[in-house]
Length: 195
Length: 160
Image (cartoon, rainbow over all chains, first blue to last red; front, side, top):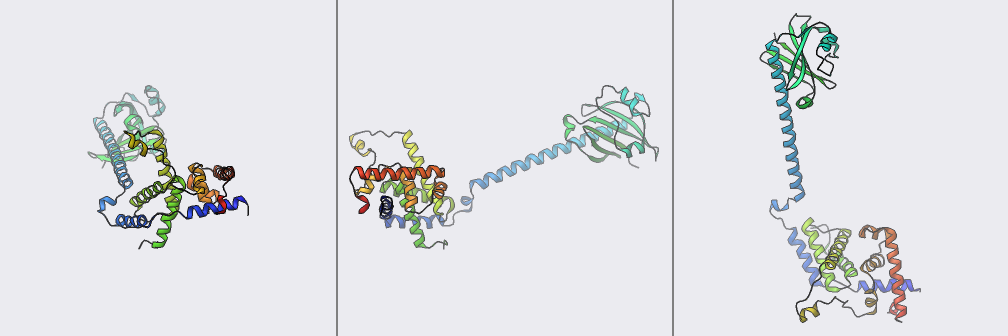
């Protein structure tokens, strides 16, 4: 038998001769039973679950708060659009060509022409003027519904600042229907009287 | 009741104690270490822990304590306390114990897990968190050292 095998045998025999005293074993087994006894429910809730619940509540409040804020902005935009539409302010440029109105409103660095062909085919451009939506410079265009002859107002504003989060919305206020949609980084809003 | 027979539990406690002993090389320290790990796991899980988890917990407690002792030196206030404050020597009398006391805890641990528990180097690596190569090296060095020490001291401990 070589030395390594003898060493293995000696180690095994040495460690197997060591043991935990019976009294200590009994104590530890009793400790197990004591700890396993049912305790008050709040004591059994692990900290990690409390932390997860708290985090979930905080996230929920943040999301809910954000949605509430977004909704408030949309309502404010709608109210401003309706108010401007009802004021019926005089036009600064009278033209049925978007390019001419765009050239006249040279301070606006975005396209005021909607890409939506339905809008272009249904509404005829009459002219435009500067205005602002929530403090952001905008174009206020007067358009005429070819089908009904009704005059409507089309707004084009850069989706910046508070308006950044708005994508699409349909709302009505004081008998005016407002439809909002996003075209790249430009927000359009069409206001028309409900029959 | 716990899905674990009482004799199994007793065997688990004994195995854990021997493992703790391989680290501390001291009967009472091993008892305390094993008890701390057992109670810690029960307070967390309230059920019998798996053997590997118990071993890992024992290991962490042992090395945490070792690190703490290296940072904080306990100074005795008088002579009587000073004599009690000496580094604990293994309270074992036989030759194997004396030889094992020359090894580092990590070396004793690797030898114990391999020779007594029958763990492979990979299994030891999982318990200790050390690379397999390190485990193999620890076992090799520990064996070499024990054989050399036994020869130097002219002990025939392997033939007890």
